[in-house]
Image (cartoon, rainbow, N blue to C red):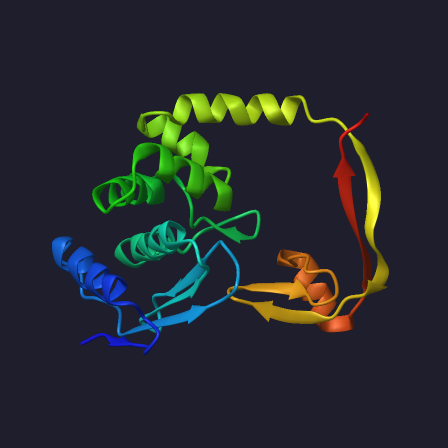
Length: 204
């Protein structure tokens, strides 16, 4: 039986049980739910310990997509292979399950595409390959925006010593809020360091 944290809403409990039953997969042992004062949600699935964790923002549709995203990982655990030192969690195999799961559980084509791409822009090419309605147009629009991006860099937060902190599933610099991942995270954990947060402004 799944153990839900007290903060887990009823709809989320029902969704976990119903999705796992439909796919004939045992539900996770633990579902942890926490709230943050922000719009977007984040989550993580740990198949080895039988747990799904969601940090829920105040956008309820994004909460639903995030939970469904983690359930897709639960139903189809990430393969134990690595590409350029990164686990291939969000590949074509994953999205062949995830997008139908979104569309079968309360999200429209447009919502699924836009919200998943906001978290993982690479999902657009998978949605396009799967023939999700609207994916082709969204993919082309993103390419147009990237090709037309112009501007100048300016310093948003001056150079400072990185202070590592947790924000949901991510490690961030508590001074500037920038996410720190991969080799940079390993290096900063070992010996610390400094960085500068830049932003790009549109050219006038």
